[in-house]
Image (tube, rainbow, N blue to C red; front, top):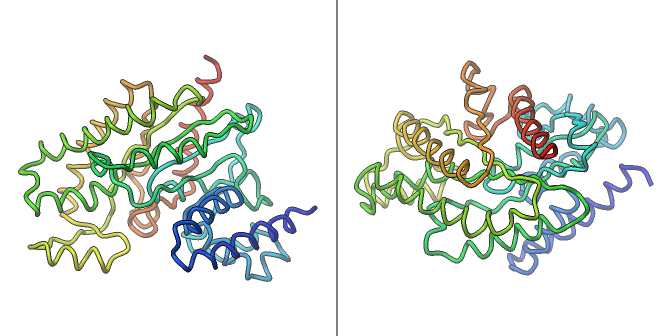
Length: 319
């Protein structure tokens, strides 16, 4: 069976479940997530969307994915090519888990004629925040999803977490505006409480079945950020923006640096790799790095990030 015929079957199933998903039933949403993850290697809606564009293109079916990408250069639809012997020869799966950044970090194909990533996957948890883990039932849901994606298929699994960006971009300003916290020190303390809940109740409970765990350094949005004066203004912006961003760039940069220091301290203490990425795009123009001012879209930076990830995996295999 050719890879394109198999892709046709896979994508037909996804379309079927996408149609069912329209009724907003939790039952169908659950199975859409399952099939999208299993067949397209990601459950994020943008993975479906970018394959849908390919699916309806004659060029894709006739000339293949590489040629289609050269003709369709929008960065939100592009996959990158990276042949990793460390991953393939050691039977390793890399699984990104967390916010919407996981979709873009996991768009890696093994060669120019590949269609769907085989050993690099993404499981999107939705718009989750770290501070939202405090006193909520979301820990149970994350645990359940982690058990699903780490279910044995004879591959060694390296999980990479991406959480905290929404806290900085949206939640911190809102907490200050609502007067739930008084200052930055209280903000940082609340975040650290949520982070420790994540590490102790989710990650440490599942780590024995994994090759290793990494945590991505946070990147701030390059959006200028809205400065609503009251809750009503804030809610209007939240309801009308796909990625609401609050606070000045300087303010969010300060929060990002402080939070990254907190994450680094806590994950290292829990034998988790801290994957530094901000240093990789200091000299790059913003639009080359973050196509929508939020999500990474630089081929060079993605590959440099994977170099760090592969070094971590190499160290784990040698132990």
